[in-house]
Image 1: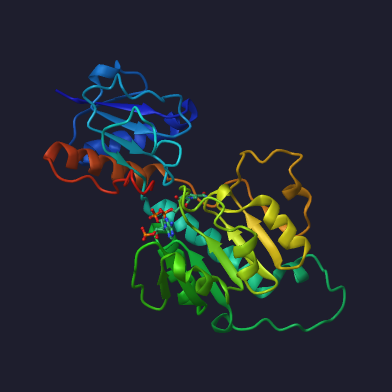
Image 2 (image 1 turned 120 degrees about the vertical axis):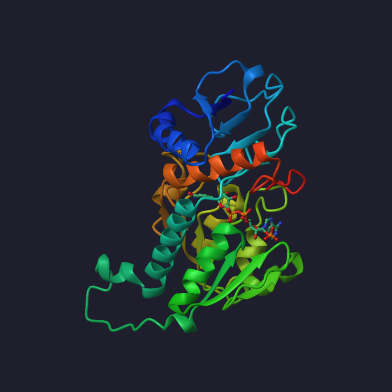
Length: 310
Ligand code: NAP
């Protein structure tokens, strides 16, 4: 009997995921009926995008797991109708995309590229940027994405600090953990990258007090989640010169409304949640491997800790 795998995502995703998923199932030796519409009581696994319409998991009485297509799970993790394992997406393509976005935006600010690209100096001013080794960069979050970005920045030579909830050791990175070390992670960070999940503990983490701990003129890059930053506090810190620039990829409301002050601010760069994206072919292999594990009675990969919220 084939496994019934429901693809619960917006219709436009089906076209890009159907073939990679079918190929990955076949490579994994899985016989699968993959469809966008299967009677709930017959579904074995749910591939899920948090912007799908599916909210009530109770009718899926025999489903073994929900396999999230996204890295972030804040829209599903506290769903009270969900009582089966929830796996989030860890995908090499998603990770590589984030490394490229973070590295590119860090280098933009480190090298002061805007001055030359926009001709802001308007004259021959030789303002030599420091070497990367002289530029302290902090990455908040040392998970799949934060670790990969921190490593990439350290390879270029940046002086990188990483901060996480539990203790980590990453070669070439100064690793700090726990709330009591946050000030130490921030107080020298000329560039601060937010790669934390959105949880009750991380919401508004970068409030007025935390922004004030950063060195004057620091740059904030947020490819994590919008509510990690207090919007009003950020605007005030930019206007006061405490923050030199903010490059924001994620927002409390997406798309960012046209009237939002972030659009017009000359020291905020808005990118439209494009820092990274799950890639169909590599993520399909992750999903197939998790279904294979479920059928073999092996533990699922990348399980979400519902208590921690990520
Ligand atoms: P992850 O592997 O779950 O890593 C999360 C990291 O945050 C871990 O290091 C974790 O600490 C740390 N953390 C969580 N709560 C904390 C707290 N209260 N205090 C200190 N550290 C805390 O997640 P990921 O795969 O790296 O993804 C990170 C986030 O990136 C996602 O949740 C998503 O919101 C965002 N994202 C954005 C895009 C985009 O296009 N903009 C794309 C993908 C993902 P421990 O290591 O101790 O657990």
